[in-house]
Image (tube, rainbow, N blue to C red; front, side, top):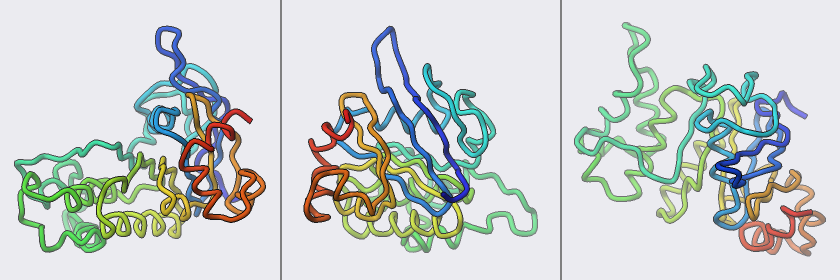
Length: 247
């Protein structure tokens, strides 16, 4: 197992006695991409928000980037790139200003060393001076994702990053995810999309607010009972995850 970026056990969240998610046990090493799979409403979003420090867990324990996962708003937030399903942009600001407003300059000689590279990676160079509110859905999503890349995060936590967007947007986002992993970081991605799941190195199935047992990609056939990879991915993306989550 590679050096662990995330190591958590039995994480859960309750609100007024109602379980939002339970039994989240997972490990993520450097260079790995972990897919949280299963039907909508299974608890994947709440799990990601707990890992990001946005929601305090009520159950379980573990570490994220070496820090206690139970401690909210910790220093790890600056090393995490979290992206939810909703766009988080300033529509009245330009593409460049959106990238800079939440990323203050750290070096007077090279104030924004990643700006040009991030614009290029997300195919946004031609939109640099456009107002964010005028962008079509694909470029707007790429701008949202570009914003989390500006601080060179070690860990990406992404909730359906390419769902419903054009092929170019989806591919650019996933190339960037794979680059973060290749550079020694890692990613945890919630997805119900077969093509996205095919780019993951391991999986944790979710269903009915319950997390199942993590398994690596090379165990996908025995874990799902499928005879071919496409069938296994289809099971993970849909209702088949329900059986896995309760095993």
